[in-house]
Length: 187
Image 1 (spheres, one colour):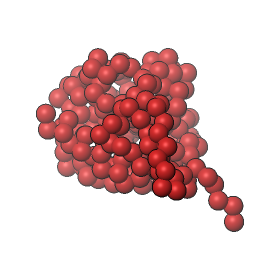
Image 2 (cartoon, helix red, strand yellow):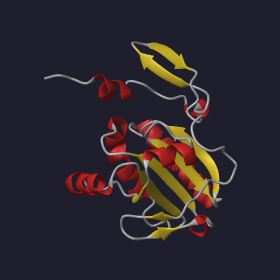
Image 3 (spheres, one colour):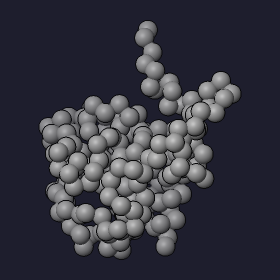
């Protein structure tokens, strides 16, 4: 049986969550490898209005700028076939279940895949709790400056307050993300 390196490696590293925006620390064999890449480089500027379009979700819901006011909106840019996106799905299901009763928190996925592929993916795997809107890859790149998936944004009252690019595919990052959403939703 052939083992893929990426799924194995994702569980071997740990984040220094207090310095999350500064570096990634990977612990392998007792040694810490520090990567200076800032996972907040992609996307619109934090602290500024998020460039909100009018979104039509697969379920027919219409979401516009006014919808974002008074809410904490968690966005996930993804596509069918993205290995990191697939890897984080069970964690996203847990995340959305945690906030299921909180009407102040809304989860919106922006898929860069064709509708037929997204629907087929959800039929086979179930959805991960996010309402899903579709957008062409080129449009995502131009409007949001996103070139890598998955990318996550948290928008509070229309303002971008958090962003990072990597799969939420291990417990420590899920806990950090849950806490971050919870704090923002309670402000």
